[in-house]
Image (tube, rainbow, N blue to C red):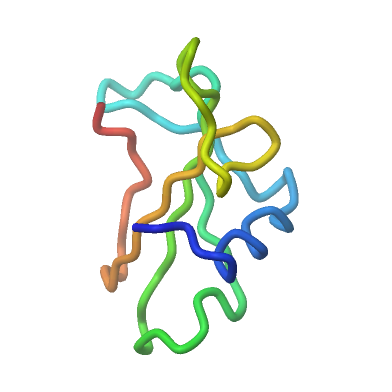
Amino acid sequence: MIVNEQIHSHVVKVPASAWRPTVEIGGGIRDGAWVTEPTGDVPTGWPKGMRLIVRKERPHPGAQLRISDADGLRLTCFATDTTVLALVDTR
């Protein structure tokens, strides 16, 4: 999913307390990665029941950040209409 201006402006306002450590398949914590589900009007205009899941992580050494990344961290987003979702890193 492309992180557009509307999504980016809301993600950078998410308080630090709303980010949870990313959990890998084996149950371990992925160092340098966090996940959250912004609430409120993000994203506006989407069908009812759609959810936005956002992940931020430190980029790999030598990686170039995109203009939509924030605070030196890579942002990745996906949308789902699933009502129950375990926020687990599948890598």
